[in-house]
Image 1 (tube, rainbow, N blue to C red):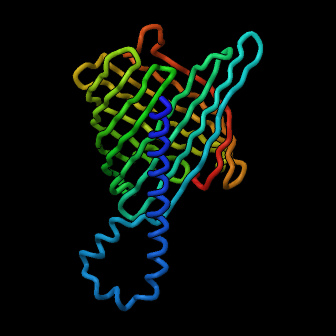
Image 2: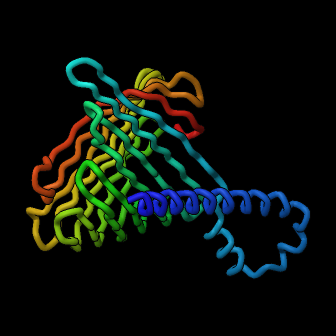
Image 3: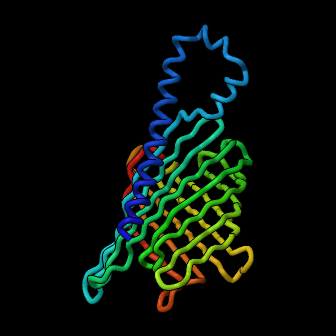
Length: 274
């Protein structure tokens, strides 16, 4: 398990360094371009288009800490650390949303779950765009030693204003899950996602939400979903107070484990991503 978690966070570190180095390289290229304006004129149009396609010139990020604690007849502690990192350019966008959850109840380990994903969006600024995705996941709560998922799909922007953003996506993915007790399950799923952000009272508070519904293509009874709804109160440009409700469901679980999990957490986020 430690080796798996180490590999997950090594992958996350590699993804973040790649995003950061690509962004730095793009910024350096922009600065250097001012001194070689005449030479740029000699570049073929196809070369210019290729450079524009690969350019990443904006980096947004925020780091989030959530949790809850109770003491008394039931001693419960839960900590959720996550990040949202996006590097964007004129054509492509690369995003990662890593998460680590750790919790105990009456001194017994409940959650020690790790998750890291990577999204590559093409033409994200258009109303309709395409994307590829992949993620790795482990879960002590559900007895999953490693889950790997990869696929591709299409997205559609329903709303895109300063007050309201709503995006619908649909993808076909392949999923492989290694359980502690059950045999490894490999399956193809349809992954439908609804993601939105809604601002109220001149951005004094806002609602963020994301929902995945993922039925298996060959067996619709094999179903997974996950939804997170967050109520956020911006303190300033960088700091946001928040509370979140999360619900997840998996129809295929090990014996003595429940299919449905819900939790409410309170926390703070810091970063330049609004």
